Image (tube, rainbow, N blue to C red):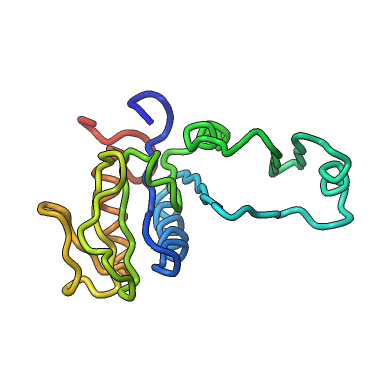
Length: 183
């Protein structure tokens, strides 16, 4: 996402089982505690279904609806079928008024990435995200044993405050919402 085109987006990328979901969840807690409104997007390459058989929205989908929305006083759920995979920018646009978006996956579409390593992957060291995306940091299970490209910091993946601080500095957002001074 470019400047002024919406909230900054940071993708957590890495192999399955590396700890991306856990780190993203912990970052959401950290940022929310500091007053930021955080959006989260999951790239579910193998599909998903959050609708329950027999419920009204499931029945609408089963009847052939191309899109189904459930709206309550405090929430909106949207399920859109077909039409190919939605681009990350389009999904971010659906999130509404947020200060920052954290994404699990979509490393090929997010401008900034944090690579998460669980320690058991082979050949994971020092990869750059595809398409020349900016690698902000590596969050590793064994930070002392994890190589990274020159100038890219390596964090213990449990150092949530440290990773959060680096992300905020990189995207120009300050705790409490809004752009940081001079950003």
